Length: 265
Image (tube, rainbow, N blue to C red; front, side, top):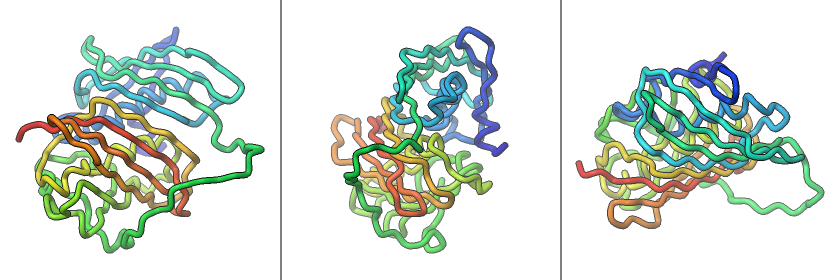
């Protein structure tokens, strides 16, 4: 098993309840990354319905920060199972407190449709990963244990804090242990880049997510994935960020939107 599979693994305890361990190598500062916590909750839901193995849509509400290097329980409920989609919800709990609430729909991304028309978003032009600097804790102003597990390279024009002149971040992402990405990894990756306000405002530290929604469009091809995230609206310290991920073949894999909270440094 890969590091990602091992560190998001869940153990069934019966009646839709699971337990897992929240690792310390997926954090932003002292807080487990939101996409990582969602991955654990999703593992619990996915364990119940192998017929629909892929996440299609995921919405997570973050109630409290998670706690690294601490066990958790996940309470799940399958809301409906249809021919093409299974819907379920999960609550991740640590120390007796609800941390995140997830509502998700699952299907099979290998299924084909009788509808031939296709409309998509082309991938942006970004220099090759070898020409892009790695994401830096020094630039964001917060420790990044997450970089023990993920290799994140940023567009050279957007890699330094406060120098891009725009609320956009683009770059490449993959697992450090070269694990090929899957549909669930795409959910994690949408929440692993620096906040897009980083290029405009500088060292903004940890930006907690209030709500994250991800739509997964297809299973990714092996190799690097390309991401671009943009904030079009910031008001009263709350930012709405839209993101896209493309695989190594240039196919759109996932789209995301999240509501984040800028904290005073």
